[in-house]
Length: 366
Image (cartoon, rainbow, N blue to C red; front, side, top):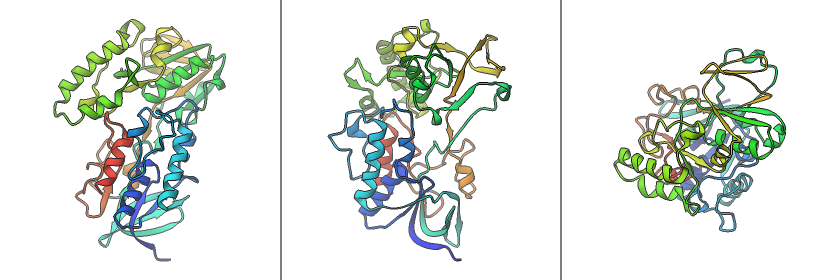
């Protein structure tokens, strides 16, 4: 059977893909979106219960359809999933759910998209699968002998499931920090967090009133990232205090030079300073009942939550030599033309302004 034809295809119907679809419809195109999920917004609906957007409602909406003002300032994850469904309906987007794209490659000056439900060919293709496409779990030594629970953050729902248990969280990104706080709040008997590379941590609202995203919006265009990181370090020190006394070393990278958001604090630092979350070094290996850390310390745990991130899997999806870097990221800016006619990316730029803000901007540039 020959491939089904469309003028524009979008691979991925998460926030970035939907925003790209609406932006293209706004200029008269009729894109077809492919996604392996069975519902729009499904990824958000499945995230842990405590999760809210870390960016403010006003600057988190997608192209041409803002988040309703009736939503809270920091939108809960279920409400954001609902917004995504309403967004797709509002624009009448042609979203093909259950169509997981496995390969995208050029063919005769067009683009062939192989999905779980057949092949499509398009004049242009927008890759909007994002940087969090597949969970990543380290190949820890001895983990197969650990006779207790190991769950990835993608499968974590609530700290209530771990009440009364000794729990180790591995990884201190935004998910890891918030999950550690949730575990402490929900009654885990002991919570530790394993930190390999100390990140910059800043309150979601500086001094309790100023959304930190506003600083990102103001400062990101300034072409002096090292200076901005020095200013940010001072603001973090004022806003959070010296975290070294609680076992958390000085941050080893800055958000402006690294072009990635800092960890946004939504309760982690309170639990850390109250002694309900304990910092540990990198995991060296697992034992039958616990973990040996890089400093040689051995501790028992009832459960381990791997907040160890995700992989884009772009190199497996895109059969386009030169389009993806060795780190698995696009070699081209989101929303901009690439060296391959008809190939675009959206939703891969993460900055201090917020990934949703950038996805909105990127999609309007297509």
